[in-house]
Length: 508
Image (cartoon, rainbow, N blue to C red):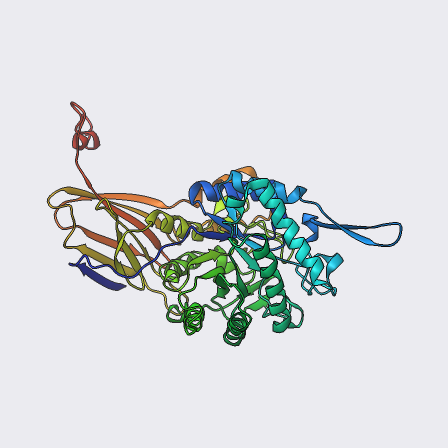
């Protein structure tokens, strides 16, 4: 067992920015019309509460926005149908979440080609006529403004396209064509209202250095009014395939933020863009929705490390995705299938759900400690909150004994209470329970209830006095949230806790 002891004798702040609730990812927008999608998002919002949501497919065929008809003389007339868009936006606002709008993919009627991506056939070719694309973007935004108000809608961030540096998301990964799309789009948006904030290029980690450099050069030289930069980050090797599933290796923690670090350095190397917001509009361990690591406790512990550091370089970081209603590779066959979601179908929170819940509850304050396995915050009211984790892969598995001594707490001689909430392989592991009961593809009602019950952290409490010492034992891939606060017993007349819990038999 590893043993680590940290004695905090100073109140000097450590660098840490917690923006965990800024944005969350979703599958294509049309999925929001499904009941289970809405129920999962409602569950996430009630328990965590994200401010924005970002996903693909606003212009996909299942949203039916772009329509056209032919007149008697053969002229093509565009029409715009916002029925489903209104349904989706109304449901988002009902749950107090706003869209981080990704513009894509291309409506088939105005696309220049037939290349498509995913089970649901998102067209990834440029428009055959940029005027048609610009009018579509303008009509959509003007409709949203008319329905929800300019103050509301102009506060929604807008991202142009998704991962154009991959040829399966943008035909021939043609960067000059993407730059043209970006210029045309941002010019159109700013002509509607300059308050709109627009960014890109939404690249992932393939040739990302040259792509980002060329994009920023283009924006500088063309005097594009860029508001923020976006990119994605995933932390695995190429998965080994077995049937429908992929089994990758993880990037070591020491390299987990390498992509965002280098993008931050590139942005800051320009006088024009130094300090500009960078939004990580997708991140997860794996980039595949059929990678079982997403359902594991290892995923939860690894993400805790990422969440403790992504704020160093990113304005926001959006986990991909909130739930398992997701069809890029088709409709999943089983409950646990390696889906991206924080929540499995049936509203079963995965271990990673609690990583985000814990960081949301952590909030902000003065960060007194940040290491490779823990973070501790002092809140404005003098209480403390923290999170600890123990990332354990097959080739680096060990239990961890962690002690944090608060020499200069504000508690003085008062008693204090330490509350811990533990997620680990033994006490909050619905994947294991599902496996143990036979991996049913379609759960019965009782099986679903059992899995929901198994997906709850273990809560413990401990009273103490004097110098507070937080002592934690973390098993493999454990994640522990803890709070420490002063307490004073004020008992009701006649109540004696010790007598209540030490009842004896009449005869012994």
